[in-house]
Length: 97
Image 1 (spheres, rainbow, N blue to C red):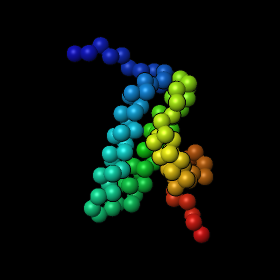
Image 2: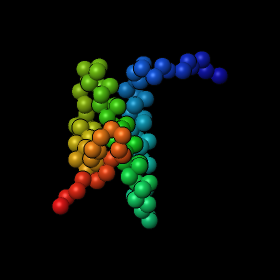
Image 3: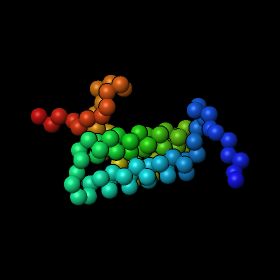
Image 4: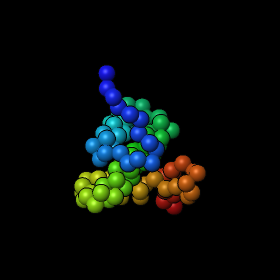
């Protein structure tokens, strides 16, 4: 039994915890790309991945730590392909027309 106390919503998470969330989200996106693709599920998983990467990058910046190149590049890619007109609207692919 552990004595883990619940984390306050405003208390920052450790980078290792946030990286674990990024890794889990990346795995989910990869698994949804295999076989028949359910576009809605894949879009949701990509939104969750982008959110996890944003949280991780923000925590690294808050701690004045460098953002790994691979994370920076993946963030740039997902920011480019997932566009959100306002915070209340889910991400959607950018219109290329």
